[in-house]
Image (tube, rainbow, N blue to C red):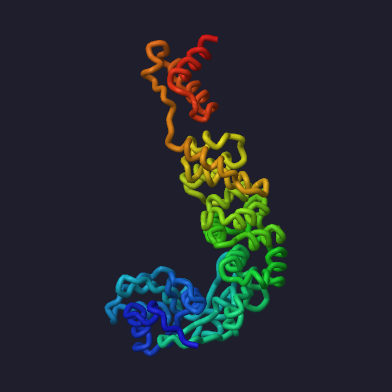
Amino acid sequence: MRIGDDWLTGAATQAVFGMLQTGGHRALAVGGCVRNALLGVPVVDIDLATDAVPDRVLHLAEKAGLRAVPTGIAHGTVTIVSDGVAHEVTTFRRDIDTDGRHATVAFSDDPAEDAARRDFTMNALYCDAEGRVVDPLGGLDDLRARRVRFIGDPHARIAEDYLRIPRFFRFTALYGDPALGIDAEGLAACAALAEGIDRLSAERVTHELRKLLAAPDPAPAVASMAQAGVLWRILPGAEAATLPVLVHLEALPGDWIARLAALGGEVTGLRLSRAEVRELEALSQGARGDARPFALGHALGGDRARDALTIRAALHAQAVAPGDIEAALRGAGAEPPVTARDLMPDFTGPALGDALARVRDIWLAHEGEIDREALLAAARGDAGR
């Protein structure tokens, strides 16, 4: 089997291969770039593995006129920028000691040792500069079958790095064959070691959850997370049952924030931006509250009001009513036909603010179907009572 994709055959990557090979070293592309190329999905990051130690890589890069950045020297990684493209070049490694979060490594000259310390068999695939696939552990068969499986003993792999628990579910959602279901041994190991998630940083867990929920259909993997007791470790109180309904409705594709809102649960253990928190709270409150569609559209805008209504319907295992979407779209961008100027001089200062709030409440209660004079009369009448 041979890979002939542009990312590999192009001048930028071939220059990095050439730099290492001219220096007398072995160089192999590894991991996600090889996996994705063989699956026919886009390659985002290019990683190379080599028997050259980091100082040697730095020396060879300088000699070849390539920019080198010592991004992870202690772990054997140097980033080589070739024609504007970043390539992470890492020395073959074997683990000496691990604590569930960090590993102490020793450099190696054996790709098989390097492969054995990776997470899943489909990630332990390599190829040379000509695209010939190197498969030290038999991962190619798993990749062809779209079977996400830990290398060796799943308990041992997870104990080396507990981040492999959420990664297992993410990879299953993205690359697994739904007909095969989730790997039983891997799932059992995740369940047995779920407490290890508590040792992970919020940033790392959020990164994995973000990618999982952006998958085309995360529902089966999330259901398995719930089954294994992993989901509540990450999102206490979350409910997985809404996601299958959303996927069946072909709703919210790839929208990880909206899908997170659909799951519910406590998100204080995640690392979200302020904007993400605001968006999540608005969607969650809109979906689980009782605001009418017109008011939702006015508060959230048409797109997010539609999303909130979709989640609300999915929570009851049904589709959103077309009339509700139309009402939300009418409410989006609409404003009451009464302004502060219309209420003065009858109202000033704090009383004016209260009167404007009453106007908005009355206008929303009528879903915008009230004219200016009637709205003014209603507002003044409320004030006089």
